[in-house]
Amino acid sequence: MAKSRTKKAAAKPRAKVAAGPAPVNMRGLKCPLPALKTRKLLSRMSAGELLVIECTDPLVTIDIPNLIRETGDAIEASGRKGRVLTFAIRKK
Image 1 (cartoon, rainbow, N blue to C red):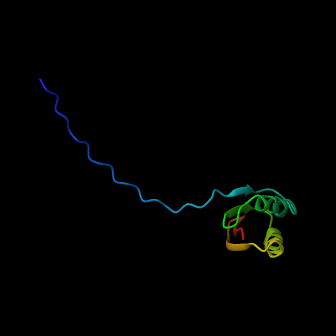
Image 2: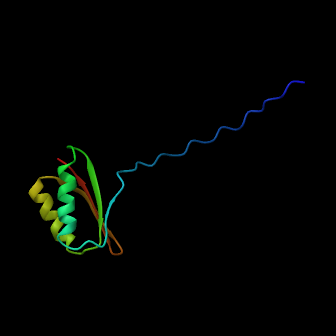
Image 3: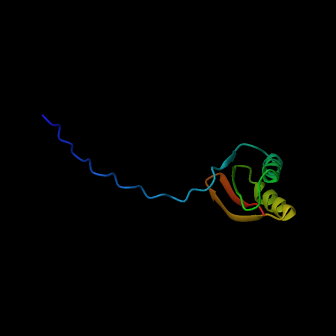
């Protein structure tokens, strides 16, 4: 007796969300550590790469833009959600 093969309904492909790099968690670090760590990470990156950092120290709103001005890179986006400040930095 031959086995009958039934085709399973093809699963619908999931929509791909354009996901950027995973954020670097710098929550809880106090000034000047977030800026220093960001500088170190940027120095290891290639032009065009994106770095996303999450911080809780309110002084990063001053430190990170000053750092980026020094390095010549670009802040593509920044935001705040509760106490967490997020910066997306593009290496130039």
